[in-house]
Length: 290
Image (tube, rainbow, N blue to C red; front, side, top):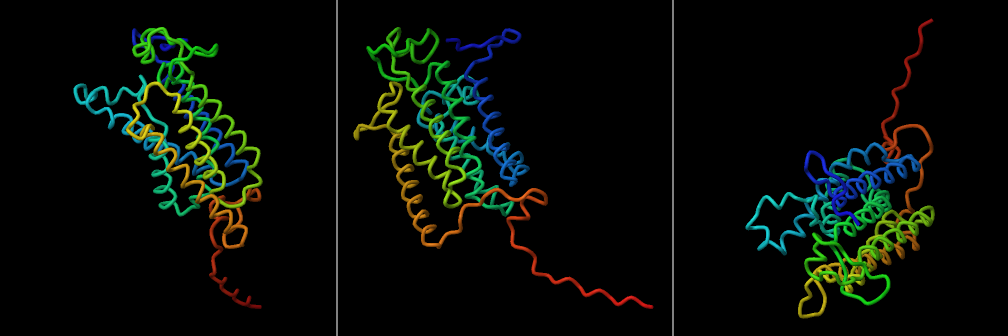
């Protein structure tokens, strides 16, 4: 397990940062591939990628720093040291979701279908991020006597708190969960009942699943209710996603909601096909003089 992958000019390059970068690239790449296959919004996916990355990183960093402001207020420059860790996936999702709402509103494109396109790529990116957490020794679990416990090396947050004790590899639990949801969504993609189907399924399964996994986390403080703030958010948002999913499913079954947007025929402008055709009539041709 190597927290520092290599050095450039004496400056360490962290495995966490490399895997986060790889996660962004493969996540956007999968989304672009899916958009190209659907023949819809492939250009918009590339255009929006920068929005998603910027808003996502800001949201992920703020959600990590704010509860720990007493640690960062003494060293403000550490606020920008994201390559060393300190990003929350939930905060990143909120930031990316906000960016998506703004972007689709500006461009006048379908928000729910756009969100569906990004769901698989987000899961792949999150899975790579959790691998980064594993090598970084953050987001670790509680001590365990089981054979699959992991002893993190010196220099990691896990070792600073628990020393050479074997810990539950909660990072890998989340990695496996991310990949499982990703496979499920790709398998049922053509069976979506309505726009937003894939995104809401992802939000419900991921939020509730990670909230459950957090019961084995060893780096989080619980409140008087016995759960962490992140768990409360996960169960709440996941529950809302389930409710919205069921409501939209019933509306689709009753014909009150349009069917899911599927692949467009080849050729022509991708976005233009999703908009209502123009109602302007062509001017009549002038008769030719003999």
